[in-house]
Image (cartoon, rainbow, N blue to C red):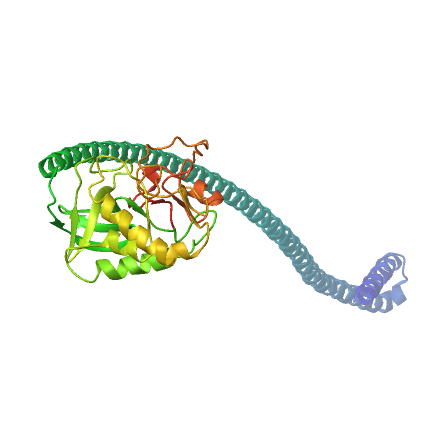
Length: 406
């Protein structure tokens, strides 16, 4: 298009130059050639005008085309620019979005970190609070335990004081009762002194050949047979002595065979172990005399003035000895001090052979003192009888003549 426009413009200039040349030539023409040059001039003029208009037309079209092309170029440029701007805007929007996302992620990370820190702080506070609560609870428990221990200690002290008070009162009552009973016994002793009244009693048990437990005046008490001694059934050193079991068995049979009564003599009613000293009868028959006559006892512990029946007892013993029965069947078994030379057990103290009168002999052995039965049984497992160096009345709770027996 541009080439064609240039060609037309060139032709227009060419024919214009030709027209101008024709005009010049026309002034210098010959008369005979005027008509010829006039035609040529008109032709050249027409061609020049035609080319000129063509040039104008093509120039206008070219201008329009150029305008259109320029507009198209401008539009394309604008579109490209718009695209570039849109691309730039999109890039900036993407960058901004990325920046916003990064900021959001950073903010989220910070918030998460802050939440974790707050959670850790909260957990630490809760742990500290829990530790404080546990410490407080432990302190309260310790205070409660301490308070309980103090209360228990105070309660134990009060109980101990109460027990001590009760024990003191009980001992006081027991002492007063013992004093009263002793006074009554002394009174009864005086009332029955010089008499041969026989008092009914109720048998509780047979302890050995010369000791029983009865109910007398509403109280359980041991009775030691006056003026006799029988072999032991569980001697602490020698064990069972010959005829000890036989004497006990015979005594048991006698006291359970009829009405049991006792008789006091004119002297003391109780020995130093608080046992009643009495003559024992079954249906009016003397148990002491029967045991002596059967060779199961010897006459011993003769302490005036309790000697009312000494003569018949010595006679019964003499008969058994003459017959050689019971304890008299063993040579040198019976001695003035007991059996086989052992220390006599029972009665007040001391001993006597038939028809002899003696005072209580002084012990040739030092006393063995034990704090309680547990300590005593470590040395004497079966306990000890009256007259033994370790015997103490307070350890003979049932007053049967044996301390700390099993």
